[in-house]
Each structure stands twice: as structure tokens, then as C-alpha cells.
Image (cartoon, rainbow, N blue to C red; front, side, top):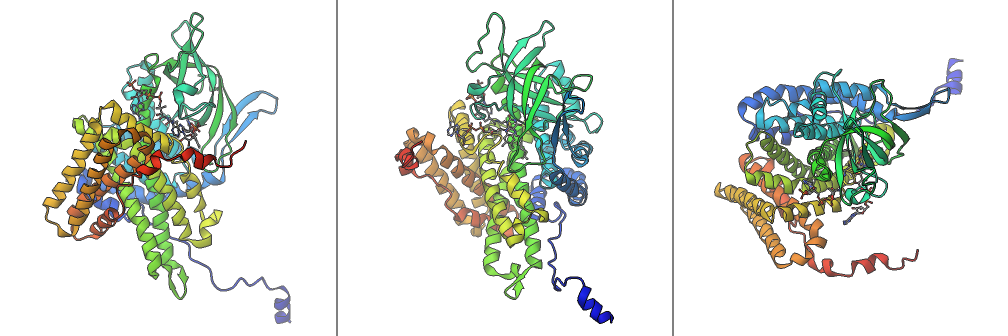
Length: 575
Ligand code: UCC
Ligand code: FAD
């Protein structure tokens, strides 16, 4: 009887096979390249002090922070515009996990570490490594931290009393005191040409504060405690905004009674990715703010912030690539196809190794920029260091962001169809990576920013870079490591080609800006990987450096710059 009933009512049989999901590795200890890089660049006493913390945090990232990040993706922010009684409240509702991430950020000193002076020139690198471990699992809490760090740096270099107070909060390790900051620059007319597009105006009050009126089109981390923003000062006497006359303002987002500072959250953006992060359109209707730059020096002042946030962008790009690679390599050991684990297929090995080489290249570039920034902040940077930092910041931003899109996309493909399935937690990486080339300045804008740095330094930044690359490569060659000789020659040849092009065709530099920036990224990374390989003799680092340098490093195509590109694009256009 029971057999008959079981046939009639037994549960559906789903088959015997279930796939083991990828396991989560400690993000620090299982990162061979990172640990090797830190062993090379950190003095023993610094390494001894920070190593345990990084190991612990690498574990905390996957055990405690990752579930919070997932929760933020599942439980996205929303705005309750009116309360039940018809009062406008603009209540931005974020989940508990988002709030917990703020607390963890303070406790872990994710901002404070860069400002405490404990490890002098290594503070910034130490902080960036912690952020690198945090970013890929943080449910985009890395974004408010980027802007908070940018604001802290700006506050540190600005004398105003408001900024001094803000600095204490932004760099606090006490969760009850810790503040985050926004960065409200973009308006409806455009976010690239900020000076030409900003309509927000500021009117001075009798007490020296200003009231701001305007519409900020993209404001991420709308739950932040303060923001830095830009406006054009006008008055009864001078009611017209001055061309390119922006000034930077400090604004707290709430009044003492907890209500918004005459800010309306008009709507939250419906975004492709970064959905964990509240990004709003904000109406400023007499919001009280304080002038913190000289009048008309707003862009130059907020540029301090951009240097930091662009470094965060790059560290997040590297972190996304590394995270997907770590998961993919584990999965490739657990998934079988055609009778053997995916990992043992030679074509898969090649595909994954290419991703690894690109990721290492982006990582070493970003670590190096963080290391130089740390030197500058500790007052031990040479003039050349500072020039290289200025030149390489936009190049690092644009290059790592583009590579992240490509590596993360390839990384999802390593999971086959599962890479496309939401509750694996994988697709979010691709959605979130797509913002990296857009915000904080698009790829073209970064290319033009690199040219700005060249022009502003009258070419000195390029000369410093040239010397830096040549010096490093010559040192590697001097080390008599035969295995690296050809690669050294390729880097030298590429930098000479680049200099030759820039000297011979100055009129092509504008259209070539993006290709020149990419070539510099290739060349600079080549020299850094070679330096690392020379130290890490006989290791996988040698193979990585050789593979990097074997690709075309100089990728300038002059014929395209003078071609009729417009006609190609507009062929058949009739709107
Ligand atoms: O997207 C945003 C937030 C997203 C959330 C944060 C995520 C962070 C990563 C997290 C990862 C998970 S906030 C919006 C970001 N917006 C931008 O990045 C704007 C993009 N546009 C540009 O960058 C443009 O190049 C502008 C706006 C900076 C150019 O403006 P102008 O008006 O044409 O600039 P000028 O006239 O060339 O330069 C004005 C002054 C000059 O100084 P002086 O007057 O002394 O000669 C420039 O040298 O500003 C100086 N300057 C700079 N200084 C301009 N750019 C820089 C720079 N990069 N560094 C130093
Ligand atoms: P546009 O300036 O209209 O650019 C359109 C295109 O034109 C781009 O491809 C650009 O590269 C190209 N272009 C423009 N000028 C040139 C040129 N001279 N040469 C060649 N090409 C050119 N902004 C904030 O201020 N605060 C925030 O918190 C914030 N959060 C954001 C969050 C998200 C999720 C996103 C997507 C954006 C956010 N932004 C924020 C806005 C972001 O910084 C801007 O979108 C970005 O700077 C580009 O500006 P835009 O959208 O106006 O594009």
C-alpha cells in the first residue's frame, strides 16, 4: 500500500546532482600578488604591525561584510515622500545592513587610517588595501567612503572652522561621531563641463553663511551627513552668475532638529547598477551652506577631492576584478565539463590567465599611485613623485575602469549560465562595474585631464614620467636577469615611440589623448611589473611581466586622428 501511495504522492525527483557553489577565500591571505607586493614595498616594522589586521579583515570581509552587502542589494533604499498626514517628509529609508556598514567603516578606520600618521608615508597605502578588501563585498558602501575620504582630504587643507569640525567627524573611528560626505557637482546641463553647466547660485546672508538655490542632478549617498558642493555667488548688486565663477561650499544635510536643510529629495534614480546606493535628484531651496574656497576657485578646490575619489574608483575596479577572479578560479575546480574539471581545460587556463595578467597590471598601477600619494601626504615626495602622481591619477582611473568592465564580464562567463543568475550574487559585479568609467569623470574627460596636467606643468609631468620609467627599466636590466631583458627593451622602445609621436605631431594630441593615455598606462605598468618581477625572481611574477610587455604597448594610430570620423558616425543619420 505504502509503495503505491509513494508513487502517487512522492516528492518530485530533481536528480542526484547539485553543483557546489564557489567558496569564498580570505581576500587577503589568498591574494598572492598583493601579499608579495606588500612584502616588497613595506618596511619590516610596518609589515609586522599591519599584517595581522589585514588577515583578520580579509576574513571579516567574506564572513561578516559580504552578507551585509548582499542584504543592501536585496533591500534597496527608497524615499517616503509624504507621511500619512500629507506632510512632506522626504524620508530616505535605507536598510539596517547599510547602517551597519557605516558603523564597520568607522570601527575599521577605513577613512581614519589615512590621516592618523601612524605609519607615515604608508598610511595611505594601508588604508587603500583595507578598502580594496572591503569594496567588492561592501554593497557599494565604498562609494560614500570615497566621497568622505575626498572631503576629509579637502577639509584637512582648508582653514575654515566648519571644515575643521567636519574633519574631526569624517576621520573618526567612533561610529557615533563618524560622518559621511557627499560630493554634489553634476547638474542637469552636464557633469563633465561642470563650470559651464552649474545653475546653482548662492546668496550671502547677514551672518556670513549663504543660501543655495539649485538642482543637483546626481547626488549619491544622499543619506550623508554633509556635502561639498559648487555654486555661483550672486547678489542684489550682481544678480548674474559669473562665467566659470564657481565657488565651493560646505553644507550639512540636516538642521539641528534633524529635518533636511531646505533640501527636497525629488526622486531616487532608477539605475542599471549601484542600486544599493541611494542616488537622488535634489532641489536646494535656500539650503544653508558655508563658503570654503575663494570665490571663483571652486573647481580648483574640489579637484583635491577628485584626486582621492578617483583613486577609490581605481581600487574598487581592481577589487571587482580580483573578486570575480577568485570566485571563478575556485568554481573552475568544482565544475566539470567534457569529463574533467573546467580548470584543467587548456583554453580555460589561457582565458583565466589573461584576466589575471590584466588584473595584476591594474593592481600594481593603483598600489603605486596610492604609495606615491602617501609619500606626498607625509611630505617626503620628490617634485618628480608629485608630477607623476598628477599625471597618472586620471590615467589610472580611466584604464582600471575600462579593464574592470572587460575582466568582470569575462569573469561572469567563467560561470557559464550561472554568471547570469541573480541569486548567485554574480551579476551585480557587472552592473556595478559599468559605473566605474562614467562617474568621477568619463574616459574622454580623464584623457583630457591628463592633457591638462601635461599643459599645466609645461611638459614637466611627462618628463618626470619618462625618467621614472627609464630609470626603473634600466635598473631591472642592470640586474642581469636574462629572462626580463626583451621585455625591458619593449618598454623602452614603446616610451621612445610615444615621445617621438608627441614631439612630431603636437597637433594630433587632442584626438589622440585617449590612445596616448592608454599607451602610458601600458608602458608604466610594464615598468612596474618588471620591477616587481626582478625582485620576485624565478616566480610567476616574471611570467606575468613578460606577458604584459608582449602585448602592443604603444597603441597610437595617427591615420585615424585625421580621418573624417564624423562622417563615419553620422552616415545615414536623419533626425
Ligand atoms: O561622480 C561623482 C561621484 C560618484 C560617487 C563617488 C564614487 C567614487 C568611487 C567609488 C567606487 C565604488 S562626483 C562628480 C564627479 N565629476 C567629475 O569628475 C567632473 C568631470 N569633469 C572634470 O573632471 C573636468 O575636467 C573639470 C570639471 C574638472 C574641468 O573643469 P574646467 O572648468 O574646464 O577646468 P579648468 O578651467 O581647466 O580648471 C580649473 C582649475 C585649474 O586650476 P588653476 O585655475 O589653478 O589653473 C585646473 O588646473 O582646476 C584645476 N584642475 C585640477 N587640479 C582641474 N582638474 C584638476 C585635477 N584633476 N587635479 C588638479
Ligand atoms: P556629459 O557631460 O553629458 O557627457 C556625455 C558624453 O560626452 C560622455 O561620453 C563624455 O565623455 C562626452 N564628452 C563630454 N565632453 C567631452 C569632450 N570635451 N571631449 C570628448 N568627449 C566629451 N555626480 C555628482 O556630482 N555627485 C554624485 O554623487 C554622483 N553620483 C553618480 C552616481 C551614478 C550612479 C552615476 C551614473 C553618476 C553620478 N554622478 C554624480 C554624475 C557623474 O559624475 C556624471 O554622470 C559624469 O561626470 C558625466 O556627466 P554627464 O552625465 O553629464 O555626461
